[in-house]
Image: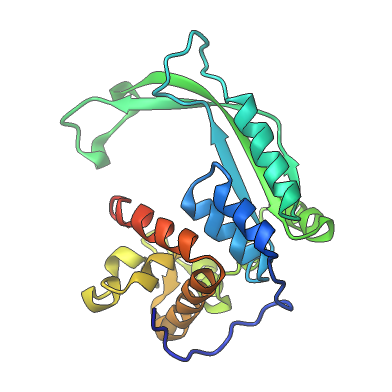
Length: 236
């Protein structure tokens, strides 16, 4: 894979995975998106990330809400510890799966058009490179600061600034699905997981390329899984 020479984002000192650690991350039973986030946390591009585990709505269960597979939860926690991360497993929540009547335009959907189809358990695991970053991130979450959250997620300063100033229509921002076609055709564009500022787009896309490059070099397996996974995401 050819990546252009691009300036490095301001990050902490990069840390390396051992072969055992990256193989452990590759085998964790989570989404490719979440595996990419773990790589970017280890490499210093992000302070922390969250993994969400949910009860399988497609699996036949007597329980309602449907329960998370505790063996899977234990495997995820064991793998995170083996890979060297600090983490906190939060208390379970109940998530409702809502269905909407057919034929109702999205802008006209009201409460009377919705019904709860399923209920399932959800557990969020918050992960950072070390306990210091984990504690700091949890404080940022409590503060509710969009600016500090954006910084913690490794988003470019210009994107965070534009987001904090955006109007209800997000007129100063652009998502990947609205990028020019010649950019969307590039695999690296699939790593644009944040709303970008229109006036600093070129610079912010360089950071997206850097993320893609880092993941590709760290784990070609996760890179390929992620690309195929994101190609299936509707309207991304």
